[in-house]
Length: 586
Image (cartoon, rainbow, N blue to C red; front, side, top):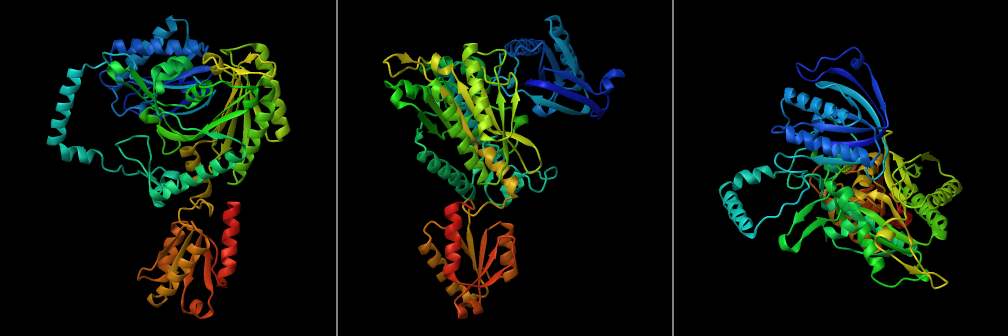
């Protein structure tokens, strides 16, 4: 059984038409639209082999999550998309009904969405740390994240068995890891997955579901975004770090993630060496660095940034191209400050937001999440922090909304919201104020009076996940990336074979004049129209055509992406235009 629990402000749903031959019979009331406010929504897929023990695991897990988020209402929502190994409908309905009745006996107000129907639904997720959780339950064991110890002898036997299997079924194994073909039948033309395939930026493969393979052109885009991030943050005295990609579970015990987040972590048992976790977030490692030496008020603000790869286990049914992945990087930073610096630090971060989003022509707004019901810390500190954040948001003159009780359990937060080309709103970056992790790790600094104090930490990302950012940017620009980000910035075409030598000379001069310029050529023996069309399809910003006339007049024919060609352009003028755009990152 697989589930996703979503703590929501509301969910509305209504059956539209039958999804199976014999769906459950509905009363007149259940055929209408139903709205439930402030529920814990449990998207559920019942799988083959599930039994009563699995239902008990489901109930226990939902009960715990509901208690953690203080939810009194539960919506059991059949959601077949979470699994490709579904049980038969009768069994699924029986177990969902059993779970419904058991949770009602536990004192919850339970609503079960109609089974066996296509439904239209709308929900609004609260967005706190426990608002989205995914879990899997298996026969004969606890939740799927449980790490089991295996004896050395059993590992050796298993290894021999696997080696034998691979030797016998090599062809079968090879077929199973062939590149997954993209089904474009239900995707819009500007979907980032289609654009990524057309432009040769990234791919996905069954060897690593939810983890993109970045191709050479795509990695150029990725690295250019990181270079821009690194350049701008260096100016602002951010100190870049790199920390281990795996840590012992003890680190996450201290941070609290082991108790609150392990369902979303990749975990492995290394026997006598202990249990290790692939890093799902950078926060605990930043705390370790701060604690590694004595700190003074003179060291603050201490901004420890990093762009390490993170891994989070998302159920296969939730994966969505680059927008929801298991492996990603984000432009992270943990800024250690004193309480009196909160306002100044947020104001500085807002300025970074403006620079990073305006350069892409992306509009964004802010959302302030205030103290949740299950907050940690002192109310007075929360009130002070929220007051400061409201003042800074007002001063920024950017549009913002207040989402009551939507802060993280350790402090209020400001989320960066952006609409994509289809008008869908996404949370990109986030700026979270944290009073709790510094306490849990025992972090201290010495103030002006020689007294020890605990710093406050601002967790912040601007791009957010680079994978998601690139996906939305591709759709926002329809693949026509700005000059500085484009994998190929200039392409040179020869009109005929007799112009090839002169065209190659232009390429050499451009490379010499603008070091690092990404330039290529198309000297194929085909028509000039074919070459121009290919360059346009690959969204190349500038195409230079060199024919007899250009050779004779020592000029260039320039076609800017999406524009009509301009003839008689002097080499020096084109160089100046290129340099100006590259310097401005236009």
